[in-house]
Length: 170
Image 1 (cartoon, rainbow, N blue to C red):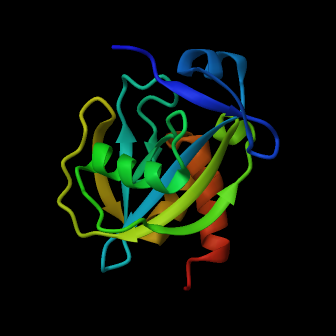
Image 2: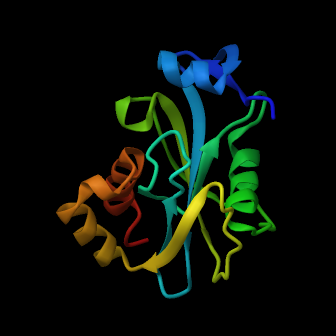
């Protein structure tokens, strides 16, 4: 299987080059990703436990679905694709865009758009990507992150702080 090729971007999230995934990560080049937060009607968030086969944060808990943009792909298209690939759900529309995080150490130099949608499951989890998943209340997640932040991918910790501040009560 050929290696994924990512768009490399500058500090303004403008495409300046393309490079293989391994090179982008090894050299710490800026690139693009999405995270999708899937809530159910009870207000619980589905979190995934990343597969131990993942090159970044193996075994860590992460957002419902997340992934890199492919070369030439836009954020909205990637959000729909990642939900389909990781959770087995074909969304009827692009999830709601919430906010964007600029590339930083916590995101692995990724510019990240965060999306939110609602789905009740069940999900068909991609075994190469996800070990397991579960529904959690916002208070359970916040308490867990306070007590054991090492259980989570660093980008999700950053995303969760911003989501709590700006979107929890909407």
